[in-house]
Amino acid sequence: MPPPSDPLDSLLDRWKDSPEPPLHLTTEVWRRIAVIDNRAERTGLLARVEAAFLRPSFAITFVAACMLLGLFLAEVRLARLHEERGAQIAQSYLRLIDPLMGKSAIKVASNQP
Image (cartoon, one colour):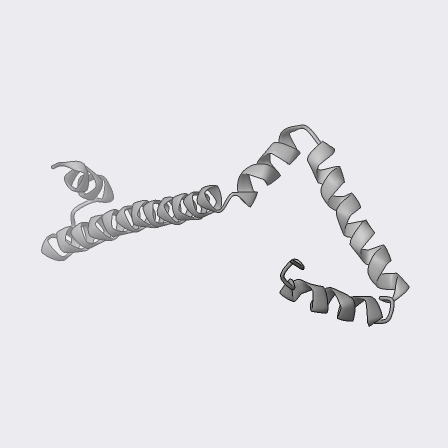
């Protein structure tokens, strides 16, 4: 009994009839393989960092942490700006009430809780 015909046999026969790939294609393939081999052989801090960022889970976590840090720093800056603006408004209010009040009295009054 003859073995059953494999569907890949006809595809492989057609592949044998195809023309040779261009030389630059083979060169490019071997160049890429060499680059990947060199990456695997490198050791050190830079190689470890690169290897860590190649993992999608680490890269996503790093980006999320950077975004959260940026939002936190923006909130801290805005809180400081609001605090300074509140102090300016308090000083303006004290000058409006008593224009003869000295600057030292305004600073003391604005620092009190």
